[in-house]
Image (cartoon, rainbow, N blue to C red; front, side, top):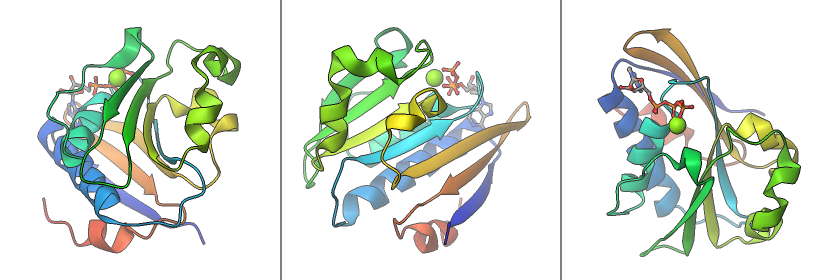
Length: 166
Ligand SMILES: Nc1ncnc2c1ncn2[C@@H]1O[C@H](COP(=O)(O)OP(=O)(O)OP(=O)(O)O)[C@@H](O)[C@H]1O
Ligand SMILES: [Mg+2]
């Protein structure tokens, strides 16, 4: 069964908090992982993918503020206090398809269960992503509101997110 949760965020601050919350939950749960855990984010320009990613980074305990990796494609960060060792933030907007990730040895990164990966514009490369992943789709509602549809895949986080009060 596909578990979907729709959340309306009425400000960038709430989007950050949502990212932070989801990051925190991911870090505090142990999963029998076979691959890296992938959080795949889709949404048009200005949807709030990077705002979400910054909150997520905070949620997994990173001190550095994430800059949009639009020009650098992929940035690794060390994760502490978790079974994940490395967090990879990717923005694949500039790629036409998954073949462009070959030089980065991204296939190997995806195979390693010690990796946590957040990828903006994931629709560009979805053919190589593990089927079991967390998908987040963001749509513009109006200037300050965004609709998030979160698909938890097999990860059992939805009850906690449902209970989350903004
Ligand atoms: N509810 C909201 N959630 C997130 N961002 C919002 C919201 N309302 C307004 N915004 C604004 O929308 C913009 C989102 O920018 P952001 O860089 O996160 O988008 P993006 O999806 O990463 O775009 P791009 O693909 O161009 O990198 C910011 O300027 C932010 O202030
Ligand atoms: Mg961005």
